[in-house]
Image (tube, rainbow, N blue to C red; front, side, top):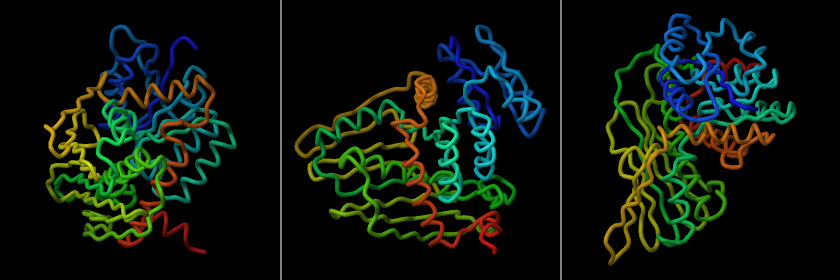
Length: 344
C-alpha cells in the first residue's frame, strides 16, 4: 500500500475539516466523494482539488464507490439517521469504515452493526476525534499520575443557541436530531474518558437522571443530566441548542482540579489547579486541525489488519450509545424509525 485512499460520504460542513486533514497528511489522499446533492458534492470535489495530491472524483452512486478497489477506507459524515445504512453497505462490501459520531442512534442498531463488522472482519470505528487529541493524551498522563488525587466529580457543558428550524438536522426527528446525539455525546464521552484515565475502566452508573426541554418536533432541545457512580463519583452536564455557555470541562479531585476552560471537546489548553501552588497551564496544540489523530489511527489499524481501534473500540461506542438511549428514554424522546421498528 503506497498511498491510502479515502472515500467520503456526506460532503457537509464537518467533511471539510476531514478533507483538510487528509489533504495535509502524508501518504494518503481523498479519492472519491458521494453526496445526496450532486451540485454540492461537485463543489466539494472542486474545492479539494489541490496541487500535490491526486484529484478527488465525484462518485455517481454508492455502488460505484464501493466497487472502486483503489479505496482503502470510507468516512461517513451524513446525518445520524443514515449512518447505519451507509456503514452496513460499506462493511458488506468489505470497505473499512470511519463513521462520524454518534455511530448510530440506538444501542440495538449499534450492536447489530458491530456484529456485522466482526462477522465480515471489516474495520469499524466511531469518529470521536476528541479521544485522539494531544491534550487528552497529556491529561491522561497527569490524571494517571495522581496529580489531582482521587477524582470526585466531573462537570461539563456544551451549549449554543440557534433558531429553531424543524427541517434542520438538529431538530428533525427523522434525521435523529436532538442535543444528546449531536453534542451531548461529547459530555458523556468526556465522563467515560476521565473515569477510564483515573480508574483504569469506566464503571456503569448506579443512577442516571435527565431533565430538559423538548423542541416542538419532540427531540431534546436542552438536557441537564446527573450520573452517579460507585465510590461517590458524580458527573453533571448540560447540553443545549437554546443556551450560551463557556463549554468547559472541570475535573475535581481530592488534591486539585483540572479545567478545560473553553470548548473542551476540541481543546488545546487546560489548567491544573493545586492548593498552595501556582496554576499550571498545560498546552498541546494540534498537528493539523485535530482530525489527524482519528484519521491516522484508522489508516494504522487498517494496514495492521485490525477490526477495531484500541483507543476507540467497539465496546466504547456501544457503552456511549447505551447511556444516550437511557437518557433519551427518560426524556421521552423516540425517533420515527424506532417507533416503526417497535411495532409488532
